[in-house]
Length: 188
Image (cartoon, rainbow, N blue to C red):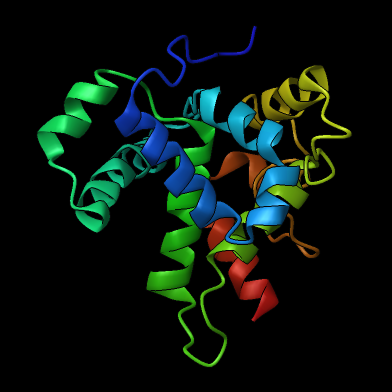
């Protein structure tokens, strides 16, 4: 049974946050509109770490709310009040990871900000990049995310967050951070 966040967007701060995080994920407004169902599904789907160290990705996703507070000049207490104990969503985890890739590992001023490209790579690896609003299938989406969460994806990471061509290790047996490291090492 998929874990679904039971609280939908119910207040202005969370609505502003959701719009902001979606713009980080897909900066182009027209493209973002075409993927509104997928973005919302990622936002309401809770990220549940399947390995102890993957809890770091959950914490990063939750801390992304603080970044929003800082960048939008919103009081942190208002964020805490708006979100309560809402769990980290798949969208928050993926965007915070894409930002870590861009800002802490692969930053290149000549390339510009590639955060949305890293996010797109994860969507491709998960096998949900074709889920635009015209083709969105919630059952298919949940099926794919269940594969990721249960680590039922392929040994090379296909249908997880990062797919590599020449795996040196079964990607299902290592935390997301190391999966990302293998992926980045292979593409550079």
